[in-house]
Image (tube, rainbow, N blue to C red):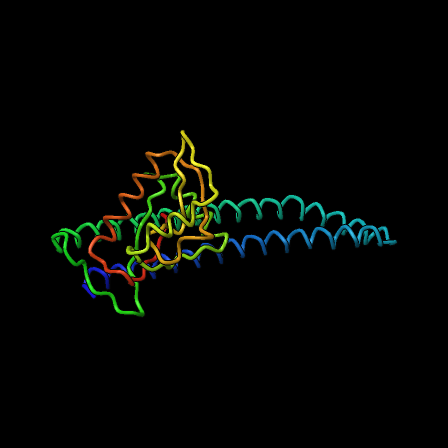
Length: 228
């Protein structure tokens, strides 16, 4: 495996860590909102049950504090979470661009020949840029969220057969391309692939970009398709 691929794998793991961070941050945000809302509910319940005037006055003051200070704290916390999530997304985008540019350098170094031998337990990373190919990127993200694999296997020899299988029964459009994920290029494509209608320029541009990133890698190579 080339030095480039070792670095790319390390960056890819770093992007996974950013994903984990963003998910945990969202969990914390949800927990904070739940805890504050639970506190509001408990105070309201205590007020409804209270039969003591003095105790009722204290509870009313506590509810006021919850509604003002608590709401302010929650608003500030939400704003901080949004800011951190945006930083995480920006960081992943920059890391993805770094992987993309390393792949470019590797392709030039290989002179269009064999890009590198990847061990069976490893993989290469293929970047799909949502700013350059927004429709293709959105389709891949949606397909992966629905259960389609991120890790796929190059299998060029059967690509034509798989394309026929995946597009069978999906009517061709005079306006849009039929985009497949996983692509027919991969062994995981074919029957059952997710199909979306997208603009031709977006689809073909993304397809060309993916093709050159995989140039020189042989059938059987594992690929992680990552949207940035």
